[in-house]
Image 1 (tube, rainbow, N blue to C red):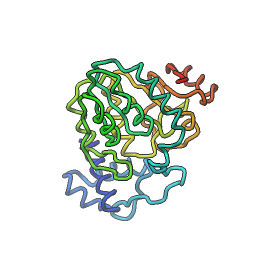
Image 2: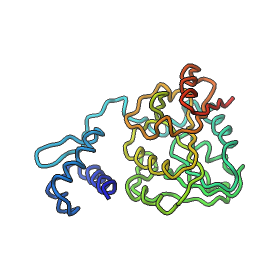
Image 3: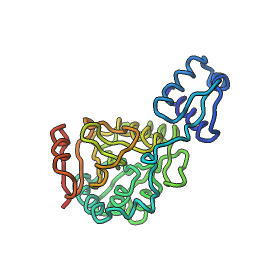
Image 4: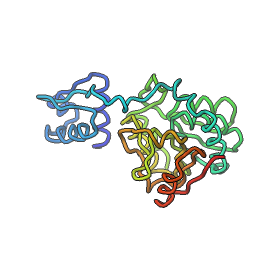
Length: 257
């Protein structure tokens, strides 16, 4: 219930820019102290700043925390992304249920899934859902929720709650905004971070796929700790020292030649 309430408060902030503590207390039928603790969580995430009687959306962001447009990202390291996507196919069993994360590398993978049989694919990416539906007979579920128009992904508590319908997910294939050998996968988007954490908890195995540029990117929110990753699939341009550190943390590192 707390998770759902915090997510709803976030949605209100994103739509209205400001919330009032007393109004939230009445809306959710909880004490003002409970609401203040919820706002503490959001403040720690850097999405709000507290003001008298409530909180407002934090509009001040580090330029490094701003994600580039999809059209820009989709052409960066495209050859490497295609090789990574092709290598990832080897780790997807026929007949499995998979979550396909949003991202430009997962989008390349989505376009190759016609080579597999009888998959059930869950995704919050409209791009990925369209790529899978164009040339396969796989069962596809697009998670409901608020649509982020710039990325064509669904986020929020409705998208997260959709996952409650599934008892088990065989494999989660996650994209990466930033990758650290110490911390794991990070995201620019708090909303994407939260939904990713939800489907990772239900997944038997986790594969992170990223090109070499992601090891030098900085993102704000840790969505998948290094210890929760089973495989990292990347390209030959990745720093061997970083990959060695990742492998020593127990992650199987695969180079897509």
